Length: 188
Image (cartoon, rainbow, N blue to C red; front, side, top):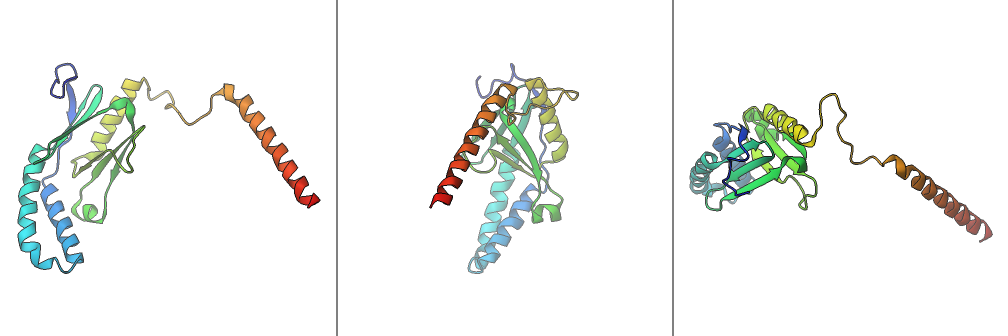
């Protein structure tokens, strides 16, 4: 599918970003610079640059839920578009750090199966109604995967029933090994 081809995969919902997005990043940068003490004089130079870039960034930031994917577009100088298939999403976490709580903001972190990096694949800061958007994405994911509310979610961690005999054999082998090791200790 082409990145801009939305005719075959129409948007069902879009995340809206808070007007406090720029303020959050300004406070965050000010705190970091003040913690370094040496950088405090540069606040008057760095904060206006952050304000301008984040204002442009929030205008270009898009997150849309389609029938099969979660599509995120972001970036000022370096434009990035990420398309995450809904069936690969394992978790959509809503979280707040101390500054976010103070500003009444929430962020969404998207984690996927087979993710090679540590942390979230996609992180969206200052999402309005983050919990509602998360629930909408998870509901659509369940529809795509064929899971309904009356049906328990798929448990990919549980061993199939046919593996019970194999697990029993492994247990028996481990018990024999443990017995042999105890006999060797008593002989020594």
